[in-house]
Image 1 (tube, one colour):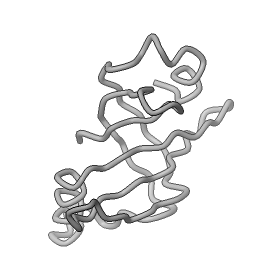
Image 2 (cartoon, one colour; image 1 turned 30 degrees about the vertical axis):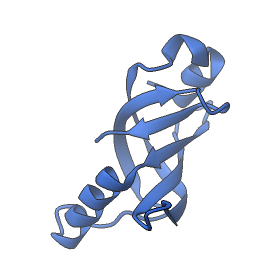
Image 3 (cartoon, one colour; image 1 turned 90 degrees about the vertical axis):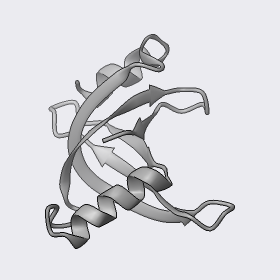
Amino acid sequence: MDVNALKQSPESYNGREVHVAGEIVALRKIFTRNNDPMGVIQLEDWHDSAGMIEVVLFPRIWSQVMALVESEELTAFEEGEVVKIAGKFDVSRGDPQIICER
């Protein structure tokens, strides 16, 4: 699914599972109130009508991704890397975003 399709009618996708692929153009590691690490990335697709969307990786998913990096099953998770994301589309906080599940 193309990121711009999600942005054109975001309410119709709210809560639905989506799969997107793109380049990580920004990555922020943040901490919850319990001091658990999590991440927020800006993902850009490469379609002619390229768009960006925020992807939230809550602590459980963040730790799974970091474990993959440590085991070298995933070479890196940083800006410039191309990734495929599966998650739930969410507009409850205003701007469209994806809550990463895989």
